[in-house]
Length: 427
Image (cartoon, rainbow, N blue to C red; front, side, top):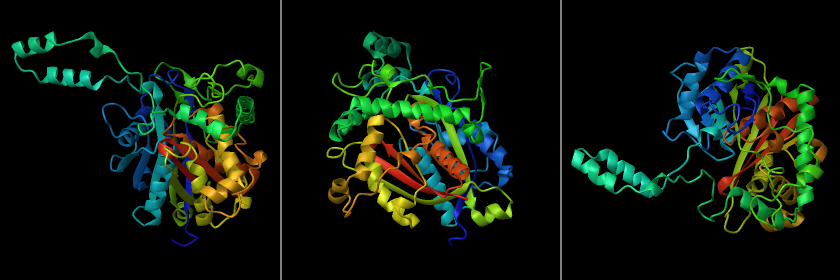
């Protein structure tokens, strides 16, 4: 595909991101996803019949095993003739969905596609043991009264004891938070530094909301119980380092990660509409920006920090985009934890890391904090796992356009030792 016929984002929207088990508690993943998809189409004013395919991310899908992308399409009222695929690349799921649609457009398989993601932590159900699962399955298969009584006699109350839902790495047996706490020690990131980072992110997010930045792409949501939610609910303008310093560590008694310097469990959805640039101009649609490149990386989490993956992907993404680190106008980094974000910055700026881990002769570059997460990040805004990538694409492109700048880098760490990086350009 020629440089003059690039893949562009013409429209996009996200719901407010809200703390799990709060105002979106009664909204299913498909319902939330449908809101983002419907608004994305409405903002573009495109004929939905022109859409060829939908990719949608989610990390914790409904227990019924439904194709969330397909159900969100139905909830959005879009044509049932659009094929749908649900994707899981942990926290990078929406970014991977966007990259997948970009790839299909570039290869000529489709012309127009929707991509994004959703997460409803409120909908995640408790898990029962395998022993309990086997028992209830065997009970369901009984046919005679005698067989049922025989099975009932084998019942024990321990079958009703649920396992609390959680995300733990099977390979190393640690949660993401525990791994991030250890990462902070590796990169020598102290508690006060993490708290200051979190406070700064909250204040930037609050100021962005106050000046109307997020109104460009956040759609108000009506809940089943009649509430209207039109703003992210976890942004705290009144937070301070002093307040955060009183919080206890969450994962280790001597740890540095707290509820105040980590992203909260969140419900929300995001979506973008993608097509060839020539097609957008033919349809007279506005263009937000271009997807210049996308790179994914993975590390051995038995040897490397779990959340360091994006640093390995950055050089490849820059090379594919044909640019240097110094060309970037905006850096948007997912803030799973302040410790992880600061550690990633340290690795980007480290000549030793570049030489020993990346095979480079110098550090990737210096992170200009005046260009970093300028409207706040996942700590105040929230992190619905499957939707964060879509938020970051929209946030980066709208900020670039507002600044009349060109290039932005999006960095997302993900469970399993993975990381993705996307380069976008405003048009």
